[in-house]
Length: 464
Image 1 (tube, rainbow, N blue to C red):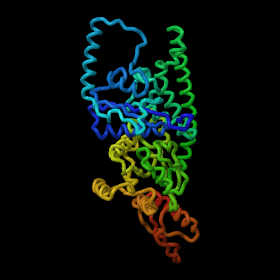
Image 2: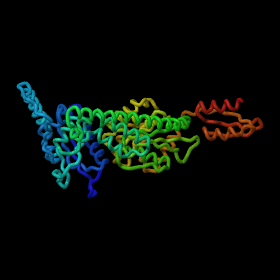
Image 3: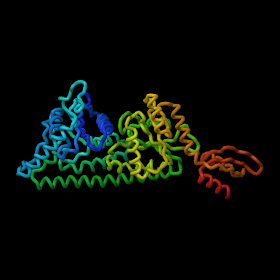
Image 4: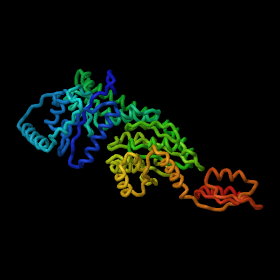
C-alpha cells in the first residue's frame, strides 16, 4: 500500500521478548515481521520492543512502553474505556498489584536507543498508518492498541493473511485466502468501531452483529463449496500425473524455490524477492527433458506461526508435496536462522502428512556466503546439496542428481522382444533406460533398467 505521493506508508513494529525466546530467535522474528510489512508496501520507521514475563492482557505492552508507542504514532498512549467502572477496595487492590507488576516488567525492559529504533531521517513523529504486532492479538487487544496509537493495528496473522490476499492469482488460491480472511475477521467484528457506530441500542446492535456473522458463515460455506469443485478438478489433473516421477520443492518463504524452479524447468515462473511471492502451485517438466519424464512442482512457502486456517485452506496446494516421489527442502543458506526455518518446514510437512516422504536438503544462495561460512555449513550438514539457483553449473548438477534419485531404484534385467512387437521397445525408452540392444534371430535382446513395477508391466506385455 502506498500513499498518493508514491512514498511507502509508515509502520511501527511491536514485539515483546518473552522468557521462552532466545535473543537470536527474537531478533529473527522481528526482522521477519519487518520484511512482511515491507511486502505490504510499508516502511518501518520504529520498533517498540520490551522484555516482559508475559503479554499485558489489555494491550500487550506495559503502561510506560504503551505511552512511548503513542508518542511515536501520534496517539495518546492510553487504551481508554468504553464504560466507567466503579472502583471498590478489591478493584483498587488488584490495580495496585498490576501496576507493581508493570513496574517490575518495565525495569527489565531495554531502555537503550535500540528499544525504539528511529530511521535516518528521524521521522518518528510523522503520521504512522500501521502498527504491526509480532504476536497474535485478541479482538480487545487490537482495539485497545488502535485507541492508544491512533493507527490501524494488525497482528502477525493479520499481516500474513493480507499478503496472501494481495498475492493470490489463481481461482483456487483466491478462494482459499478469502475463506481464511473471513474466518480471521468474523470474531473481530464485535470490536469493530464501525459496528459500534451503527448500534443505536443494545438489542439493535446485537441483532446487527448476529446478522453480519450469519452473512460471514453463509459466505464461507458458499466459498467452501466453490473450492471443493475447483479441487475436484485439480484432483483429476493430479491423478493423470500420478504415475509420473515427481519432485516437489518445499521450504521457507523466500528461500529461492521459484528461482530454482525456473532454472530447472526453463519456465517463466514468477520470481520476486518478497515473502510469499508464490502462492499457486506450478508443475513443469524437468528441462532438458529426460526419459522417462520428471515433473517438478513449486509450492507455497512456509513461515513461523503460519495461521492454521491458511495451512488448512492450502491443503490442496500442499498435496503436491504429499504426493511427490521426493522432496527437495530448499533452504536459504545465507540466513542466520536457516536451521529454525528448516524446522518450521518439517513441522508443517508433518502436519499435512508428508513427513515421511523421502527428502534431500538443498542449501541455496551459497553465492552469498563467505568461504569460511560455506565450509562450516558443509561440515554441519555434509549430506546437503550446496548450490546457487543462479549458477548454471549448479543447476545442471541438481538436474543430474534428481535423475539419479529415480535411477537409484532401478532394477536391471534382460528382455527378449519379438520382432513382431517392436512397438514395445519404443515404450521402454520412454519409461526407463535401455542400456543396450542386440539383434539376433530369436528377437531383440534388450538390457533394460527401470523401476520394479515398470519392469513387471513390460514382462507381462511380452508374455501375452
